Image (cartoon, rainbow, N blue to C red; front, top):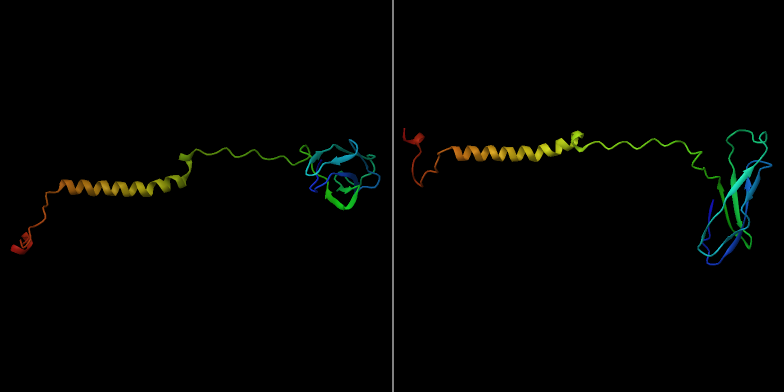
Length: 142
């Protein structure tokens, strides 16, 4: 457990528990934290095996400053990593070329470039010359 002293002066803390009658709490000793310091402590809870009503019983820690009982924290027992539910492995990232939206995004500008190239090829292949001003086209002379 980690205890953070957010106060501007050092404090000594008393830790006890609530939730299961007859549950014994033991720590490494007195909890002392300098101003702004984080103190890491080991907490052990012990009870008779027949004592708890179920295998999963909520336990609440109560931390009170010994020199100022206005400074107190009440919270549930944190779950250790061994008791946490197993995490699913992260999904392997898919290669970019296997994503359909990538191809959709690429196809739009690619279609515009292709249309421009086709237009350029048609323009270069034709002999059409712009008529001179005042000249009549072949459709009008006939």
